[in-house]
Image 1: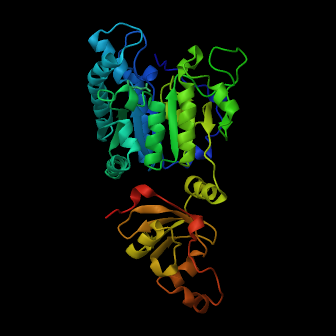
Image 2 (image 1 turned 60 degrees about the horizontal axis):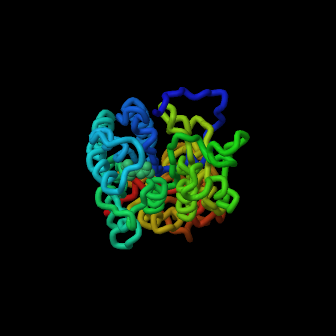
Image 3 (image 1 turned 180 degrees about the vertical axis):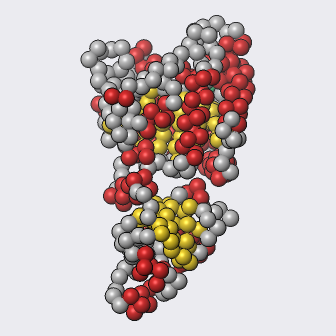
Length: 392
Ligand code: GLU
């Protein structure tokens, strides 16, 4: 069972910037955490603490999608199926029963925070076929826009051996890439990737950071079908490949503690698989994650569109500036109707900015008496919040 071990503050370091900067997070919860190993019952206190963490993240303006296992584990208990491996039909039957308990649990816990839980059951085809992929993506993005809490699982009841993931590690990585998540969290009963498969060597060490999936890293996860890869490290490393290819960081962290997401924020031990980044991406992460905005820039509808189309912010599209900021400081970019569109490093101080807003770029030099940058905020100096984008 997931033991509520309160973590040891002394072992914790600062949270990684990949975590603090992540605006959209996919969290995968393994069956071993959700269901009590002995009784097969739902670990409801633990799940409640996880949903508390999700609500905290939401309050901080961060979007969360859960990928929850546990349907088979919960269902086999209700059906009184014996311990040991189930055949495909039995696991499908168990999933059909267990998924109802899961959905109820999420709906109840989310409601306690004023959130609506939404159930999304996916099959391999939904992530591999373009049209279905786009459909699933639209539904997930709409749910996020409506501030619901999407809870995804594989549609085990209809997925057959040839067309199923079978593991939620890879499924969650596909979901993360589908919705352009910045971070994928795999909560597991282990706290990361060790230099040797679990149980094979006593001096195995946990890796803090993995920057490339080398054959050596794959070997650490163990071979397919070997007794030692039971912990599922192999599918986790495969998930890391999918996530990295989509520019999404992944972290394997222990879920055997209460409030496991808060623990990541407090720098708990885990293994990070970092997506390759270019300097612009890392700069944007830093902008969205690290800064205390000093003011706000209110932009018109046309500028808003231009920003989400990847353009820089020109003075012409700005209606208003507020706060007190200097050149090179961080400001919030806001829409006319008050949506928080993102943050950026501004190229002009507040007083200068106030004089050039609404004006053409060619007029800047004349108004200010010196030739500054054309853009008020250059696109490389800007990190936009996708969730506040107006899709209409
Ligand atoms: N979809 C399975 C379930 O809900 C879990 C797969 C996994 O554990 O990765 O029981």
